[in-house]
Length: 97
Ligand code: FES
Image (tube, rainbow, N blue to C red; front, top):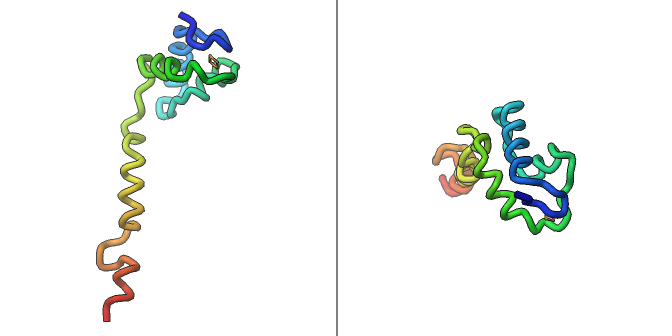
């Protein structure tokens, strides 16, 4: 089935590219842009991206490596506490006498 009509990319092309990327680098994050590049093509109108993403997500090799999951939540937690213990946070240092 054709997924991207602008570039004539099929669901089989996408699955093959995802599997190839996962086999060549087990820790890579697979994005639509990387799949386009792996196929030697470039997105044009972008109208296919919802279906493109859905096809990618159904591929066997699409899963995100465990150590790369929840990075946004971990980053938010880190920024909140600045990586310092509670007694050493900057706003509290100025108020203590
Ligand atoms: S349909 Fe895929 S870029 Fe236009």
